Length: 111
Image (cartoon, rainbow, N blue to C red; front, side, top):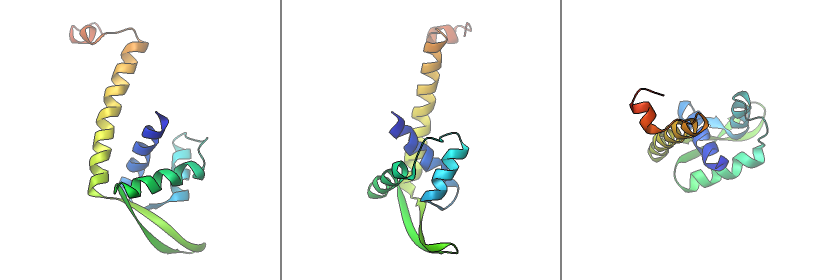
């Protein structure tokens, strides 16, 4: 389950601007995903690139070798929208379970 969630989080970060792998790891850490390594992120990026969700471009770096920057494709933007919908659905239903509320409780104003 975490893999699918990480995919969505990576797409959301990349949507805002072109970003390189290590920078993605730093961003995820800022959001609280501090137990993730670059070794977790790079295989996901490679797979997303093969699935044409992201593209990459090598650019010069002021601090060493060229960096691979990732950006979202139109297909990636669609996938992000699907992820957001699935996430909202999952979040709503998990919260119902945790609070012992049914969907009918909410529709009747008891939620």
